[in-house]
Amino acid sequence: MSNPVLFSDTAERDMRDLLDYLAPRAGLPVARAYVDRLIAFCASLATFPKRGKSRDDISVGLRLVGYRRKATIIFRVRDNVVIILRVYHGGKNVNVEDFIDT
Image (tube, rainbow, N blue to C red; front, side):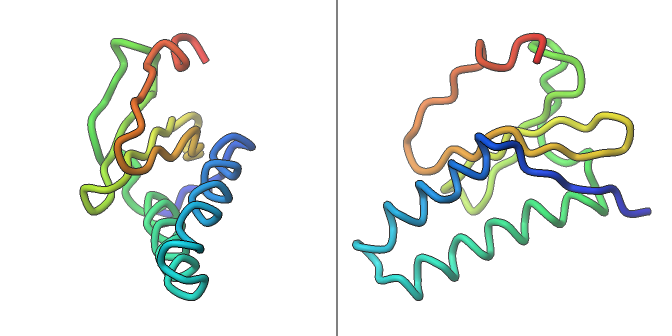
């Protein structure tokens, strides 16, 4: 079964910011390829959305999953829809208070 995967506006901004950060450091083709792989990983949650760590203690349905030890993807599964809430890359701190009752 495949579940729709949607990106919040904030998650889309996270991806643009990541591309903007990586492009001058690694070159635009390399940066785009990395971001494309990260997006594809998020899209793969459609087939197995219960991956990662459940954080129902913070907010019902909230989950975190890592990507290549470089990114943390915060998402929620609601009514069989996967909603990517944030994509934190590198050493950015995850502020769990941002997700309480969202």
